[in-house]
Length: 206
Image 1: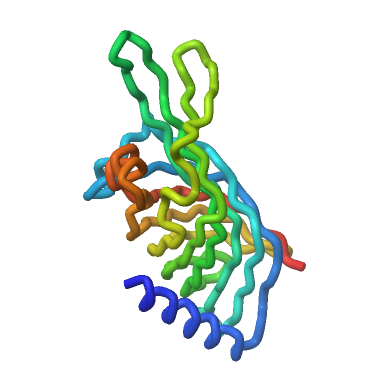
Image 2 (image 1 turned 180 degrees about the vertical axis):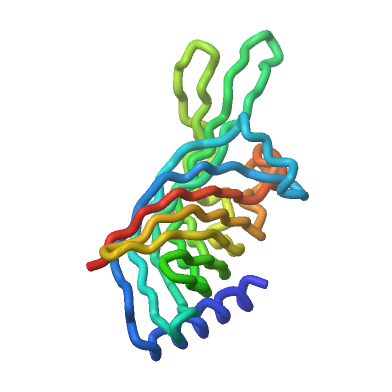
């Protein structure tokens, strides 16, 4: 599954490079992320984590109504999980996961409006779990770090946007296929969950 996703991203990006570039620029925005188990409908909005996304995009027109858009992004994902301690203490675990992510999107255009969807490939560059107790004290969970999580994430993304003369603005949802926890501790802590993210973004052409 991972190899197929990588090959698909490479082939589609190569096809885009042979078309005429119409848009290229910088983009960034806000992430509203969570982790899901089994069915994505199980996501609990109360555990949502806010982060950011930033990077580059390149849009190549295939024809007037269709384009391919690869992107290279730094994106923050994760969640917050509530807990109740054995002796009355309570708090939450905050999972902070940072990825370099490459979505390759098919873009359908009607005037200035666009709908886009396609696969993404993500590489985990940093992971930190923090314990925030009921008094607001923040402590690192030392036994969990990047080595305890899967470094590769694959999934699909879909959304819509509005193009303007100097850039674009839009909303996108991404749905991960890979369980984020690799080791026994991380797997139990995350309950074998996967990434889920809603992105609000704005881009400006070079």
